[in-house]
Amino acid sequence: GWRAGVVCADTFRAAAREQLRENARRANVLFAAANISDPVLAAQQGVARMEAAGAEIVVVDTAGRHAQDSSLLAEVEEIEAALNPD
Image 1 (cartoon, one colour):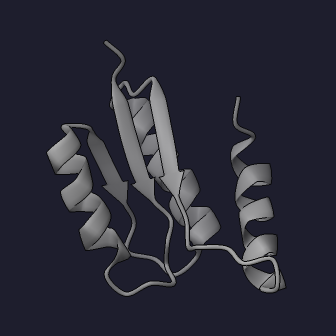
Image 2: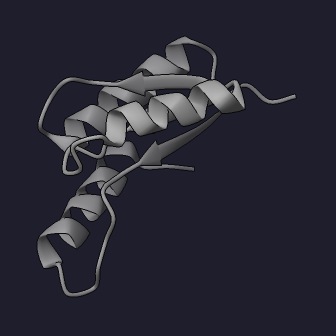
C-alpha cells in the first residue's frame, strides 16, 4: 500500500489540529502540524516533514473556503503556489 499522511494548515479554526490528528490516528496515517499562524508556512513545513517520513501521498487540510471570502481563497492559492503539487 501507499504511505499516506495529512498536514494541518488550517490556522483559522480553533480545534482543527486536534480533530485532524484524531482522524489521522483512526485512519492510521502520518500527521503533521506546525504551531504557527501562517497557513502557507504550515503547509510547507508539514509537507517537508511528510516527505522526510517517506509519505507518498500527502493531503493538506486548510480552512474551509467560501466564494465570497476572497482572503481565504487567496490563501489557498498561495499554498498551491508554494507547494506546486503534482
